[in-house]
Length: 209
Image (cartoon, rainbow, N blue to C red; front, side):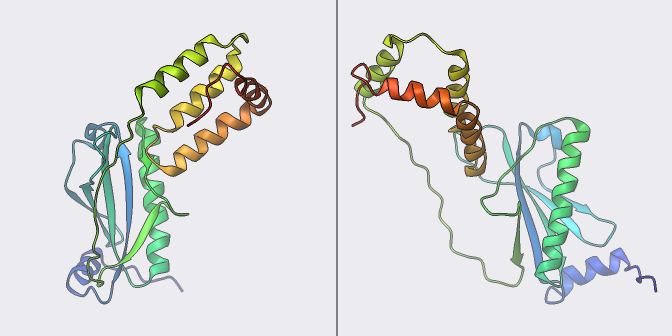
């Protein structure tokens, strides 16, 4: 027997007026280079054919981060598992938009799934926001620049590329991206990296404080 198709307007009315019936939602946080790739939208509600709706909104980000961060919030579902399932569909929709229009998207998450399922009826949680910065002594910077330049061994182009990827990994916006870039740098040149690192532990290389 075919499943009865729900009326989208009735479903949205239930989501808004009867949140206890559709108490779960899911949230996806992502970054793009510029909001122009999203049609210059910042605050928008997108109505979906199944009766659910997606809310697009800007998200807070650190001062050093590039691009612009947004979230897509999808309400509402009767069970958490159903919200998770539709969250995956939301991710697919965003990635397909990125691929078909040829612009970059970075998903921001630190869990196994890109989306976060939440209870719409739960009270807001207490949260804090802060930033920290690192400042090395000038002598550390000069010593390492000098020692790297003065190494007697010839420059290995393969190792140089590995070092570049490894160093750039620390500028990634998420722990997941940092991990993937770091592993890529180390695995691609593991043998060369090991040999050269041992050479750098000699007298020409200053010990770490």
